[in-house]
Length: 189
Image 1 (cartoon, rainbow, N blue to C red):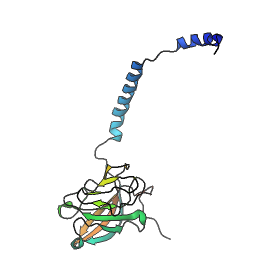
Image 2 (image 1 turned 45 degrees about the vertical axis):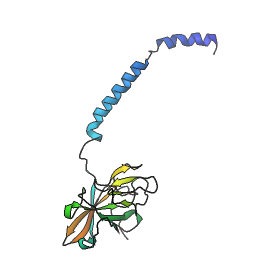
Image 3 (image 1 turned 90 degrees about the vertical axis):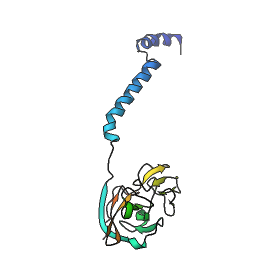
Image 4 (image 1 turned 60 degrees about the vertical axis):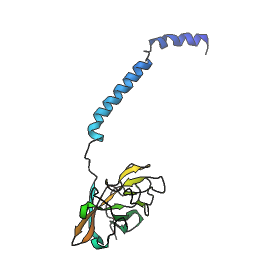
């Protein structure tokens, strides 16, 4: 830059208000607090329920045939890899569980992060499934399939169960099945 061009810029520079580091931090903190308080009622509400989508009722197993910590694999609500699911009896009560002590639960067996298969990843000592072989996400089966660790951000879709005359039936799915934009039963030709 030449001396002449600097002299032209100097008056304009003096006219600009100077924002000190302190003013910048105060303004940034204030904006963050306003956004956090304003969004708290929307984004961080307690008790926000997962969407439950009803499907045709399907018999999964007999209560007599269930052994604690031995997963039973099935497809629900459709056939195919995206619908691979498992039912397991835990040691104690679980959210959304059925049966004695609400200990029988069922979940979709596909990781919600990038679709990794969770088959064979049940860990009875902690009542979790995982880690996913792709990015190590682990899900808590006692708490509606909540993410315990890893890259996943969505709970594992839980299959809603009912018991009638000693038989266990799947009736709905809570949460979005990986790979779908919404849970619907595909229509057949």
